[in-house]
Amino acid sequence: MNKRKIVIGVTGASGSVYAQSLIHKLNDLKDQINEVGVVFSETGKTVYEFELEKSIESDVPFKIYKPNDFFAPFASGSAQYDTMIIIPCSMGTMGKIANGIAEDLICRAADVMLKERRKLILVTRDTPLNLIHIRNMEQITLAGGIVCPASPSFYKKPETIEEVASTVTDRVLDLCNIHIDTYRWNGK
Image (tube, rainbow, N blue to C red):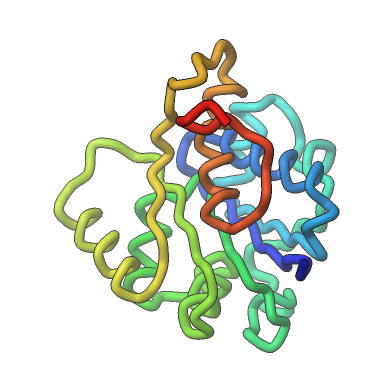
């Protein structure tokens, strides 16, 4: 099995629990992962630390890159990162990506994923949606990205916020073709 090189982008949309869940799950799946790089937008860092009451340095077990570090390996397709997940993905970030505006490392890395025809997953969290959001989602989809709204499922009857968040992050890991032991609709 080929080990994966994954980029996680965290923006300022509410829903830091999703990013935390994904990051911790990836840390537990090291046997399938070669490398994980994490980049927070400035607002993403602020919201993460506010919502989770933890510093990113103490909570994130992977290398964290600054949002203006265009020397990060995943700022170029030659580094061969195969997957990028932006979780949560703000509508502003999605709009920049949909329109080719790569003014920060998150948007640049997303642009690299699209141009290299690699996996880009945007876990959007905002609601309701306006027509601009919907058109940007269409643009991302037409460019080869996946829009995966943070819409939890309740089949397993989750009892904690973390369990609810896991229903989304497990779905994201499935989209990445990363093997996880999780609840399946058919009970297996």
